[in-house]
Length: 251
Image (cartoon, rainbow, N blue to C red; front, side, top):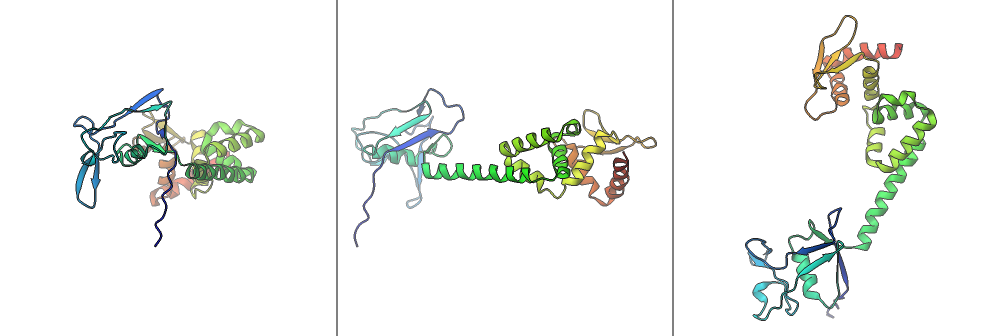
C-alpha cells in the first residue's frame, strides 16, 4: 500500500481575546508556575511540553541536551508559523492554551461560521419584513417596551429590521415564542397601570380601584414580564389574566 504523502503548510494562529495586546508571549516550556502537560492516552502519562527550534519533538523527554529555547510571541494578536517549523506547529497543537488562549486560523471553518451568521441574519430580516402590522406592533412591544405605542409604523418597521439584523437569534425566538401574545398583554397591563412594580421591582401588585393586593414576587435576576406571563398560565393565574385582559381590551 502506498504511503499517504503528508502535506506541510504554513499556518497562522490568533489570540481568542476580543482586544488582543500589541505583544503577547505564550508559555513555551513546562514549569511548576506554568504547567504545560499533554496527557498521553496510550501510555497513561503526562508529558511535559517544551518548544526548542532545533529539536524534532515538542515533548521534553524526547529532546536531547542541546535544546535551543526561543520565545513564542503573538504580534497584534497574530502568530505566523512557516511550514519549515513543524516542531512549533506540533507544539501549538498540543499546547493546553489551544482553544482558550489562541486558535489556529481555519479559513474554511471561519467562512462557514460567517456564512451561517449571515444567512441567519437574512432569515430574520425576511421574517421581520413579512410581519403583519398587528404582529409587528406585538413583537415591538415585547422587545422594546411600551414606548413603541407612540411610534409610527415606519419607525417600528425600521427598528424591527435593524434588531433582526443585529440580534437574529433573539428576534426569531421572540417571533416564534408561543407566549408572545400573552407577554404583549402583560406589557399592556403594566403600561395601563392595572398592575405595577413595587419595592424596587421585587414585587408585582394589582392596581385596581378595589384591589391593591400583592400579586407575586419577582425572583432575583428574572424578567417581571416573563414571571407574570408564567403566572397567568397557571391554574391560579388564568382567571386573573382573563379579568385583566378584559380591562386591556376595553381601553
